[in-house]
Length: 317
Image 1 (cartoon, rainbow, N blue to C red):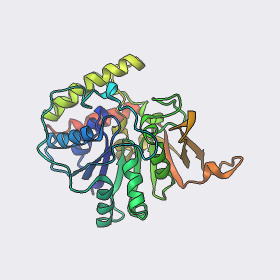
Image 2 (image 1 turned 180 degrees about the horizontal axis):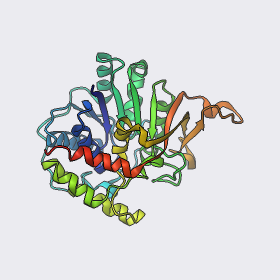
Image 3 (image 1 turned 120 degrees about the vertical axis):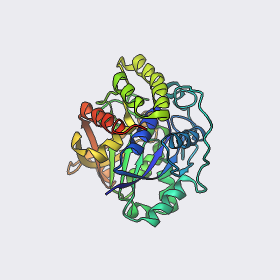
């Protein structure tokens, strides 16, 4: 039985890898993509999502979403990481499709009303669309099967500040609303994603089986891998967003814990994710006020990228 997915994304090189994976795995039923600012402006993210969907041979709806944070001033996008176009500075054609008539938050609300209890929401960018969906209809939290968020860091250092991961830092107030909502939520953060490295030979094997989409993946990977080589001295890249999909398909690869999750919204702790393990008593109750969630504290990175290659090379596009 397939797993219905709404994929909330800001493509983004690792987002593009995850979108290819999402469409390649027959276990996923892709209800739609929703887009947000983050790695790139939301207009670029939407263009990329439409184009990647076409290259995958799909006509899946793409709903454009939030363009800026809920509260904090808009900041810089990660263009130095992903390129001006989000995909490594390629000469890309314009997509033929146009965005869905509904914006992302309304799309999420509508689809969960049509299929209550069925849809898993996978969010791999800043969390404004989820926060706005909750504001539009708080009962959306009761209709979602599961939320999987790629973001945050519990023990691992941050990647945009010493303590904060990029997606959460980009809109910490949205993350605070999402972590406070009563839906089943799993955080797949840097503690897991930094364990996986997608190396050049593996990416080349994947790209060779993915047709026109594979060409885009290969060219964007080169730019992304150059960034990682310069800042972390690794040969390859961390496939962050694909790890969120791996959690759904290969949960046995992850080391998890249950507890309460909150986020700093001001000062030096802006964007920092705080995890209070279930049953642990602290000096006051503020750390344990949010609902229980699952966080990933580790992952078998070698097995994860092997699974990723297996799915993306199983058939030739």
